[in-house]
Image 1 (cartoon, rainbow, N blue to C red):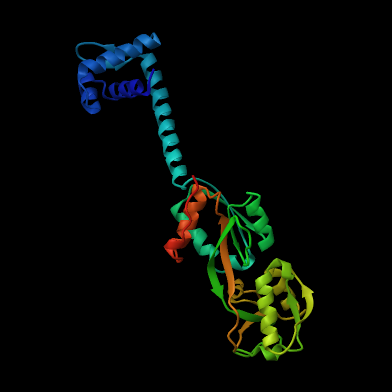
Image 2 (tube, rainbow, N blue to C red; image 1 turned 180 degrees about the vertical axis):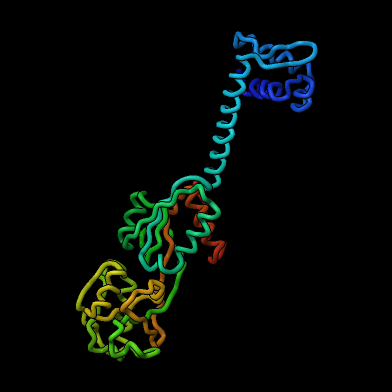
Amino acid sequence: MELRHLRYFLAVAEELHFGRAAGRLQMAQPPLSQQIKQLEIELGVQLFARTRRKVSLTAAGQVLQQEAQQLLQQLEQAVSKTQQASRGELGRLAIAFVSSAMYSLLPDYLKQFREQYPHVEIVLHELSTQEQIQGLLDSRLDIGFMRPPVDHPTLQAKPVLQESLVVALPLGHRLASQPNLSIQELQGELFVLFPRAMATRLYDQIISLCHQGGFSPTVAQQAAQMQTILSLVTAEIGVAIVPESLQNLQRRGVCFIPFQETTPQSEVCVVWQQNQIAQTTHTFLQGIWTWGIKPGDAPAVAN
């Protein structure tokens, strides 16, 4: 039995008329009748009761109609899902991010991607830059949003965000009411900072900004996550210099003051394995380029 036999059978079963079924199938009636007869012989059952006036389904024919309809629907779904997967519209994406990416660009990217590709499962992980790099190299992650530098020959990185630095102060701080301040005004303050290994370039940018103000920061406490850093600022453990996107967190007990000086630009990159890029990953990255990055930078999908 071939699929075409089932399609012939269903056409006749739905029309209950060989002439109309043949017209629907765009074939002559005699070949259609022969195909149905061959199907009945192969199955060893009579599918249709035929008289001069009408054609009706037998009990066996009614069962085959139900089963054949389900079978063809499942086949159509299988074909559709296969085509979706080849276009990157179906599958699973493991995406990691540094916390500040979730307060800036990532929510918009995820929203637009989910709306356009609702059948792609997205699994999110909040990880440090070093953890993301290892996850990409181990193929546990597909895409990472992290802070540079990303120095590995098999990883490709493109910047997706550049932002200025601001100072986070507890609301009761002596400088909290100022519209902006000079970096020199933070001399003598205790600082909350993350370990350098967590984000090397951002750490060095913060230290450089303090040196620009004529001092080296005294670190009272270190914390790995930006949310924890802001919690420590709220608790008046110290002040912190952070990317301006953290203002979107809207945490109670802390305020953000811009600097009078031009600050270094904090950067977030999207990173992927350039030699192992799956179609779903490629589709997600193409979406990012469409939403604001130069299309010429889009990666090619691996064969």
